[in-house]
Image (cartoon, rainbow, N blue to C red):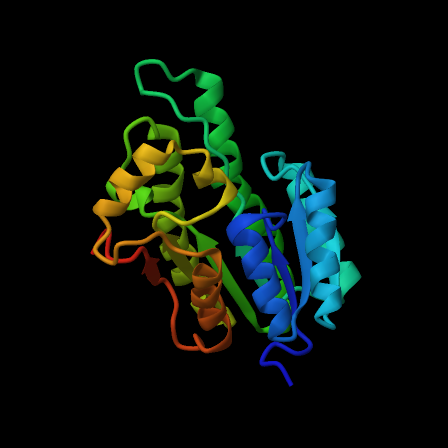
Length: 247
């Protein structure tokens, strides 16, 4: 028996990387999982297939999270298909790196639209559903760069810092309803996105990490799972999973 048997979960940006690892981990714990994605049909289906092979239940949930109507309709549809919504993991995120002097309005707005606005759209749609059931677990994926900043990532860092503040306010407002809201902030993690960083730059970054290595998506997923399965009295908090890179 999994600790999440009978629970319904939605993981955004779950077709690859950290999101994929979270979706699979929650399925291992028994949750029915909606795999959200925007464009990678094959990759999202691969996650659903992987969960099915584990004996779990998973569905596809395609949506553009930067579009308020698309995001909210997706949450509603997931709840209808899975028979409710108990868990929301806001993980979807994009980067459009450029120095502040050269960053365009479009690059700024695109990142804020997905990484911050999207979290608001899905959360606001999930709240009434969770409130009706007197239970909810919301985990927002931020980033170490939302705490310390990063050159060329004014848009990304602002969105991730905003997620931290958003989480605290949501936790405060929703505490009486039985809904907890927390944040997990990964450091440098071995994902497809990070693999695009030049090898020399990666080695330079690794030297600044006290534990001497990059994180694995499964390690982020474990922290998320802990907050959902064992975090009954934890809300408004942030777990840093970064190998000591920021303390």
